[in-house]
Image 1 (cartoon, rainbow, N blue to C red):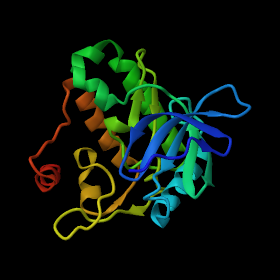
Image 2: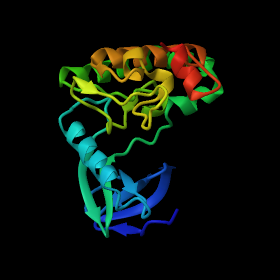
Image 3: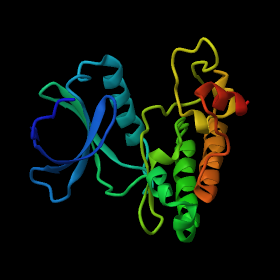
Amino acid sequence: MSRPPEHLGPLRLIRQLGVGRRCQIWEAAEAGKPDRVAVNLATREAAGDADLKKLLRHERAVAQSLNHPAIIRVDRYATTDGLPHLVMELFREPNLKRRLTAGPASLASIAQPIAVAAAEAIAHMHDRGWVHRDLKPENLLVDDAGGVKLIDLALAAQPPGLLSRLLPGSVKVQGSPSYMPPEQIRGKRVDQRADAYAFGCMLHELLTGSPPFTGSTQQELLTRQL
């Protein structure tokens, strides 16, 4: 994976915060502004991917329709030097999945504020007509006091939305198998209740250290949730 340029227009990339298959997350300084930002930047290898560009633009549109302190703010979508990216609010905290590596007891004192803040963020999305569709501990950043930021709005949709079937013959997975309700697994239309199910799975993991269903393969995991 090639390294991006040090500068993207007014942005100076400072340090990498995370990396995915098609995007990297960077902390950046923006010329003329005091606060640092996060940049969700397509890799050079993925920069021409039309589907990725569509997802990034969609995530910005979803975020722009929301206004909640527990949901990450997305300021803009841009393409600089051929690299599409989102400029976002910076929240220098690990995600819930990473925090849980120390065991659920390490979060016992802040489990309630985490749950309340996450529930309020999800409720705000629902009030604005959106279903997140990919709620999981990796998409919840958590600080030491239990403050949270819900991230990764790329799969958010306004119901009814038809998801791809995940059982035999499936070619595409939308969502995360450990947190998907039966109707989403079966490729049926989903609404806000799908998020409620995923949130319940997250709470189970927050309190016990593991999601309610596990399996040695994705197929086994999906079948156990039906």
